[in-house]
Amino acid sequence: MSENIDPAACGAEVLRTEISALGQMADGLGEAFARAAQLVKDCTGRVVVSGMGKSGHIGCKIAATLASTGTPSFFVHPSEASHGDLGMITRDDVCIVISNSGETAELHGLLAYVARFDIPMIAITKNAESTLARHGEVVLQLPDAPEACSVGMAPTTSTTCTLAMGDALAVAVMRMRGFQKEDFHVFHPGGKLGAQFLRVRDVMHTGEELPVVRSDQPMGEVLLEMSAKGFGVAGVVDEEGRLAGIVTDGDLRRNMEGLLGRNAIDTATKSPTTADPDMLLEEATGLMNQRNISALPVLDEVGAYVGLVHIHDCLRAGVA
Image (cartoon, rainbow, N blue to C red):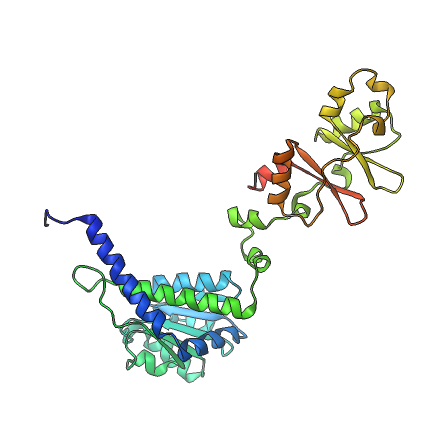
C-alpha cells in the first residue's frame, strides 16, 4: 500500500472520470432514447428489469424509480428467471436488460424467452455488437469510458452511467405522462415525503369527535363540551351550522369574571383563523405557528363547521 496516496485527490479523480462519462452519454442521447421512453410509456403491462451482479443492483434501483414515478415495474434476477421466474413476464410487458459487456451468460435464458414470445426489450450495454444488443428492440449504449477504479476493472463508471440512464428514462416517461406531485403522493404515503402532501381533510376530527356548541348555550355546558372533547376549544355554530366563533382556553381566562352567567357567543372569538379541508397540512401548521394557536376550525365552502385540526395531529403526521 502506498503511503503517498491523497484520498481526497483520489476521490476527486473518480468523480471527474464519472462526470466526463455522464457528459458523453448526455451528448449521445437521441432517437434510441426517445424510442425507449415511448416504449415504456406505451407499455400496458409492467416494465421488467434484469441484470446480473452490479448491473442487477442498479436494475433494482431503476425498477424502484420507475414504480415510484407511475410506471409499474419490478426486478427479476436472471438466474432465478431460468428456474421458473420467467413466468412473471408476459407479452404485455417491456423488459429492460442490463449488461455492460452484453455477453453475460446468465442472461441467455431470459433473452431466448423474450425472443420466443416477442416481448419488447430495451438493452442497456456498452457493446452495441453484443448478444444483448442484437436481441434488443432498442439499444441504449453506454459511453466507451474507462472505469474509475485504480485497476480499471471494478464496475464504477459503467454502473454510474447505467443508474443515470435509468433515472433519465424514468423522468422522461414521468414528464410524458404529465405525472404531478399529487400522483407522486399516491406512491409515497409514508415518511417525510408523504407528510408533505397530506391535506387537512386527511387528519381533521369530524362527527362525534368535533367539539361544537350552539351560540345560545350557557358557558357551563360549553365547559363540559370542551372538557369532554379534550382539544381546549369549542366551535360555536349558528342555527344553520355555520361557524359563528370559537371558544378557547384563552377566551375562558379573559372572561373569568361572570363566566358562568354568559353564553357561548358572548365569550367566543368572533373571527377565528380557519382552514379548509383541501389546505395542505404544512400550510395549516404554519398558520398555527404564526398565530400562536393550537387548533384550527375547518370550514366547507359555505362556512359550515365540518372539522377541527389540532397541532398534535400535525405532530403525529410528521409535519410540525
